[in-house]
Amino acid sequence: MIEFKNIKKSFGDKVVLDDVSHIMETGKANLIIGQSGSGKTVLQKCLVGLFEPNSGEIIYDGHSFTDMNVDERKELRQQIGMLFQGSALFDSMTVEQNIMFPLDMFTTKTFSEKLKRVNEVLERVNLEDINKKFPAELSGGMKKRVGIARAVVLNPRYLFCDEPNSGLDPQTSMVIDKLILDITREFNTTTVINTHDMNSVMEMGENIIYLYEGKKEWTGNKKDIIFSDNKLLNEFIFASEFLQDAKDMRMLEARGKISDDRDMGKMLKGDKLD
Image 1 (cartoon, one colour):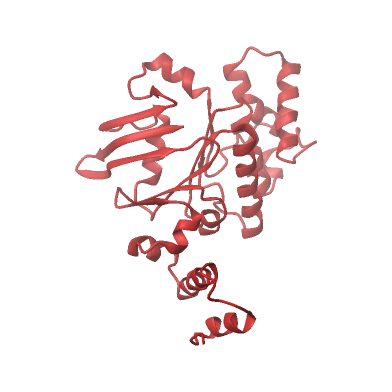
Image 2 (cartoon, rainbow, N blue to C red):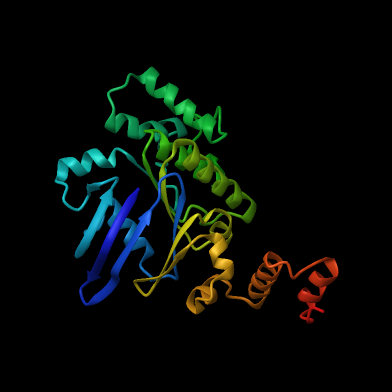
């Protein structure tokens, strides 16, 4: 679990985060959503220590990250995995070398032990036998899966994902979403995901915080979104008329008011139900 309390962050006169508090739950996909400039990336960087908040507290499983010294933070960071937006693989390294990099940095394992672990995580992301390939030889989806393999190679307790579906087609995005969710549940990690992908929100949003102009505007899960009457949230999630119609249909369906295909057809055409 990661808890943050009353986080404030400014750059000069620009207030980016304004008194934001929330709890990221263990074993769940915790999503940070919001428009560009809402503060979601800055919040994630504060949580991992890349930015220092001006005030507030960040707590990892009962231990104050805010009060930790440099050595204590370094030790905690070994329990954190990070999937970067562009995968951030080293172009001059093979897949095997990329995934082995954290093991080289933070462990004293033998090469055979490290190679065994590399092969284990490659198998987990369904990418066996690509050890010697270079990133330039991989598709976008494969790069993301290699990035996930590298992020979990140290068995992290906390996993951070920055726009994991950026640049991917919808079908590949669904594969990445399912993989992240499966790993989260399998290893009981606290997974924190920045995303603007509404498919991801509706598929894996178990614990969501919606930021608007640096403030916490709404929290809930993917089911709560359907029934939310928060105007700002609805304008963000259901931006088009088509998506708003889809929300209306889901609400009626959940309330038992769409009884058959004829009713669904009427909804799609904008007609009133009997």
